[in-house]
Length: 214
Image: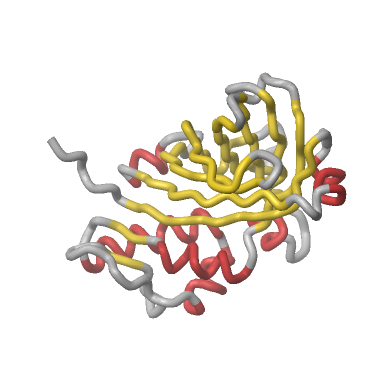
């Protein structure tokens, strides 16, 4: 039997300096400028209504990573994505990425967090586009930290992310699903940058893709 079509899928690429031996993302971003870590992922939401109702807003993530000290095209064996998990601070929410992969016979786990805080001033771009990352040795975040750094979603990558959004629902309904998630995921950045993103080409018949006119 075939699996039901997903309500939404999109691709995201983030890259940035990460240093082996660092245990603090800021320090790792400084020391790891010669060793960038790149994450290419596809995130899938099977049921948008269930995703929104879920307090952790969990979605499926498939990815591969590139990191010179470990390998140039490493498949992620297990990935997770959570949008806007609550924190102890009512003004702050976190977006998390978890990726388990193996290199040279050793298990690693990248634990990445975007902290979105309702502070005064135009800080939304900074919050939404920086993934503070810890590289653990082992299969999950309980393993020792062996590296750290900050991955960044650049302007070009943001526009490609928006353009890659597609829904299996057709027509207006599918376009509404895309826009609904876009505003949930990117907040005010959606209204600002969605019109700048190109329409994704090559969608399957009946699929709705990002529409810059909506």
